[in-house]
Length: 301
Image 1 (tube, helix red, strand yellow):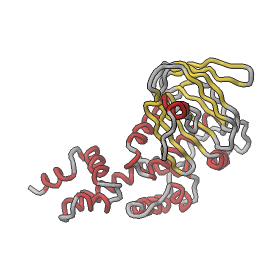
Image 2 (tube, rainbow, N blue to C red; image 1 turned 45 degrees about the horizontal axis):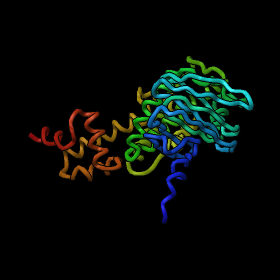
Image 3 (cartoon, rainbow, N blue to C red; image 1 turned 45 degrees about the vertical axis):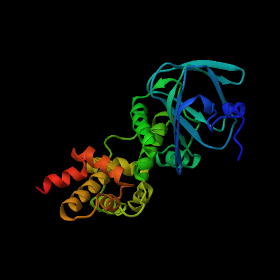
Image 4 (tube, one colour; image 1 turned 180 degrees about the horizontal axis):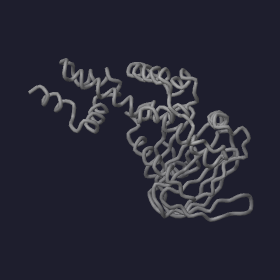
């Protein structure tokens, strides 16, 4: 297959309208209802971005650092916005989008499907919807925190847990709708703990996910709860998110296998639901303080 002419390659734009040749980091992770992006420019050279209207859904962008400005056009009018660290913008793909970009940028972005937004709005008691009310460039500390976690996830996408990715997507989407979609305020006094039966069922299904793919949606449905409510109720009940709790269970199971068997590190990694040995070694080291092989040697003395 012939290579593209240099001029065509340089002018190629990605699905968000950015010039591919301008990007130092260009990462993408698809996860069903969500698509996660990391877009970071090579330089501060001005450029433009434009995408035609489509039925794709919604996009939330969060700046990982400051120094970026963009002039966003609305018909024949335009407004200039400054972006500091943790600044956000929201796009509806149903609208044409055109902006002149000034200065480099480093953004984490999440694309959410219309089906996810509609379902979550209904679950949050927000059936009527006139769009998201988010002024480009306004700061959001919660989105800033989630963006940092997402940036790390994208950098290590090859060993990312599907459960964690789904949990992160639901959390981002829920915050978007609660803060910018005019959802009714959620009572802080409401009982958000799981019942003993729900807790037992959720933990049983999470343990099963060490060997078979189980989603947050599967578990929430089994508990007869929405995904966003389930994540909050599980955290309130166990003081862990579902992913954090599952990771602790995997590490504990790995300890048992390391101490009681002669199975290889690779076999133990797969048996405990890790994608490969390197993923297992990193997770074990972060939680236990030393690599699994070193831990095994130490306790065998």
